[in-house]
Image 1 (cartoon, rainbow, N blue to C red):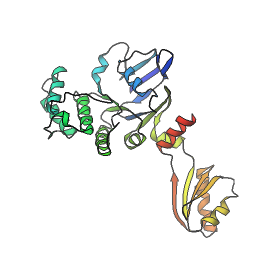
Image 2 (cartoon, helix red, strand yellow):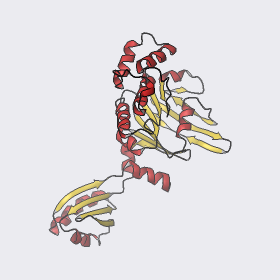
Image 3 (cartoon, helix red, strand yellow):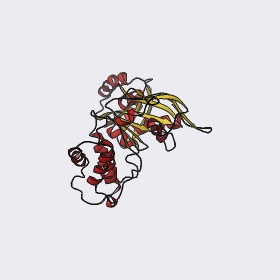
Image 4 (cartoon, rainbow, N blue to C red):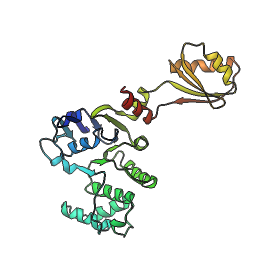
Length: 303
């Protein structure tokens, strides 16, 4: 089943199209990174999914429920806004007790202790007002998962964090893999590549990619090889006349970057050429595109 599904979901503000014809699919149990430049429509999408904004047209389904029919689905979601707010005079434990009281949880003490231990705030006695940004993000996630929802929606959870705070937050999100569905928006490509199973890329309100990272890397592969040999000049002279070599450039002292038409043919042919020309191979590496390569290609080139 899909945790999140949208069909032609759109939101217009006067004549501006914040989100247009969004057809998003997020399977259950995955960590899904929702990428896009600032102003691309990420936060508007989240507001639509949480019924904080009414769509201009289209439909959305959360865990199989049409969100326009009822708001009961919201009980199945844990939400972390980009800048979570707290009562600074509480400790972490007091704050989670307060949240459990207003949400009507029965016998919450054990659950609260588990959440505090999970986010590594169980030994923290200081008031929230003294917390670092990373500690507040972890407390925000503890609040979001206190009722054990199957779906977490996180808006820019690592934005403005220092490296240590970002690592703490990413490690925590990664720990939910296979247990909960996590949908988080960000513009930080490295965060997505580290922990996500799938990615969606939105540009000017329109979804341009929605797939697994593995499939994206395969489909955007440039068929590029890096090889390091003891006689790079001789090898380049030999390869320049072969029609299956598209581009070739030297790297450092003995390295060569090759872009080829047929990767399998190149992998078979190169060892034969090296042996025939008596050239020693020191290193061989298939160069896969990074998520940054794919993002820049899609967002800036429109492909």
